[in-house]
Length: 447
Image (cartoon, rainbow, N blue to C red; front, side, top):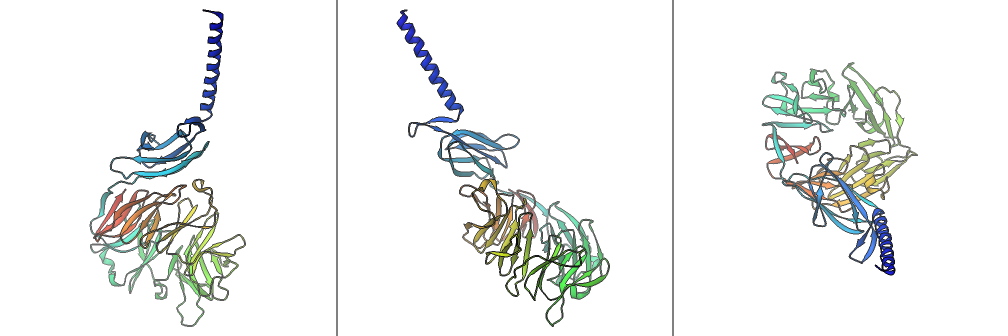
């Protein structure tokens, strides 16, 4: 072999080696060849977790499966631009959405929730005539035969039974629930009973009839109500059925509510909001600015980041200076996510949300400002969280599952078309499970 030939081979090998090194370095740095434009582009990626194992399809091609234990999926080296991802599993609805990959960034899709195509139904009670359920939706009260039962919907078992011997007048039966869901007061036209849901016991109590009415509220063994005298202003009074004593908490009160372990009320004189706890004697002024005259409190939600006040004249937040800021003129349903980061509410057919603290999936959104999510074709009757990313929406005709927190177009599922047999959706107990009434049967439905 001639010296010139050997030299050419050597130089060619060096050039090839250098090109290969450059290619490896580019590949290691996340670059890849884009056949759509003939250029080398820096790639990105995508990741997600799923509630169940599933096959992953990227741009119509099988890309793998979610991990065995965590049901997670991550794909790197995706070229910049629009992609479609699908999660498929037999007997489950498909989860699908489009997302846009940016060079050098990993797109986080959060949780992909795949509900079953058909719910797994279990009969909890074959025959119950419901009377009431707790304000926080943990207990259902109803007649099973001649007995009145308190049914623990989380544990799916009867917690307390009041037998027929108590001679309860079913036509005049009412219940006052405590917000901690540990106690309740049951009363009819003649008698009253205090029910200890945690201890699974009950006892007859002697309560003044003036406290036994639909607007009364219960906290820490005390029943609170507005005085019944015809003259105004009315006073906020209480009866302690453990100590069999009564007292006045505040004078000149327009409205009140019990929540978050406190009693909140509005003053007629100033229309400001006040707060007092059962072991305190002096109320603390919660708001410096006034509500509109005669506004009534409906709900107050307090977290580390925010205080949100729902009234019959709108929804307000309380800023650091204790001033009320109106964020919505009307509110039909109001629910707080379990991590206390998102507040969602409905107004007729519309769904809105408020970020109380920054969310990694929606880092571009500003906290404390209302965000419009969607417009449904019919009025939203009820809503409740599945987890911190998805909401159930209940209406007259259907039950839907909606992805609330998403960087892309939200995923929406139609879970059931309600019919005459399903009387009402009660609430979710844990993640996929719902409990509803199907004619007289109390059923658990797992999606």
